[in-house]
Image (cartoon, rainbow, N blue to C red; front, side):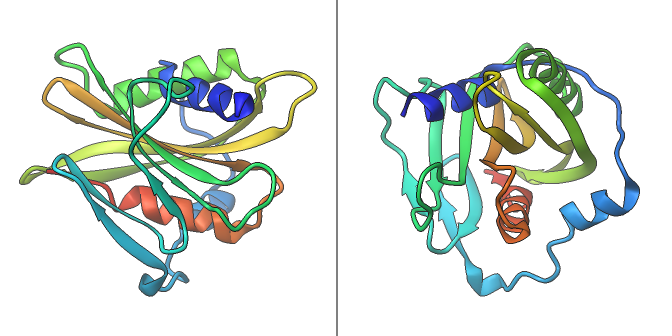
Length: 195
C-alpha cells in the first residue's frame, strides 16, 4: 500500500515543462488504440466527467487517508498479482489562466526531477470535450522509479481543465507489463469528457 501511495503522490501532485521527443514510430505504436475492441470498455459517469475504462477493472471512489485527498476516482486491474495496473483521476484547484498544455508540461518537469531514472518515452497533442467545447491538451508517456531499489514504472498521463479545477488522469503500470495494458490505459485516458 505504501508503494501505491508513493506512486499516486508522485503522479498526482507534481508540476512541470518538457519538450517533445522520442522515436516517431514508437510514439505511433504507443498511442495507436485502433486494434482494441470497444466492447472491452465500460462507461463510468459522474456528475463532473465521463471516461471509459477496461471492463474487468474495479472502480473505487471512496478513499482512506493513504490516498491524496484530491483523488476522486481510480480504476484497478484486479486480475494481476503484485502491483496492479491502474488509472487514477485527481482533481485540484489551479491558478486562473493556466491551460492544460502548460500545466502538463510543468508537471512533466516535476516528474523528471523527482523520479529516479526518469525517461520521457512519448508525447502527443490531443483534445478533450469540456462542456460543449474542445480543449487542447497533451498525453505524456514516461517511466521512472520512486527509489533506487524500487521497481520501474511506466506512467501515461493527461490533463484537462474546467473552471478553476485541473483533472490529472494517470495510468500506472510496471514497465514489464504487456503492450495491451499500455493500449487499454491510453484508450481509456483519451475518452475523458468533462461535463
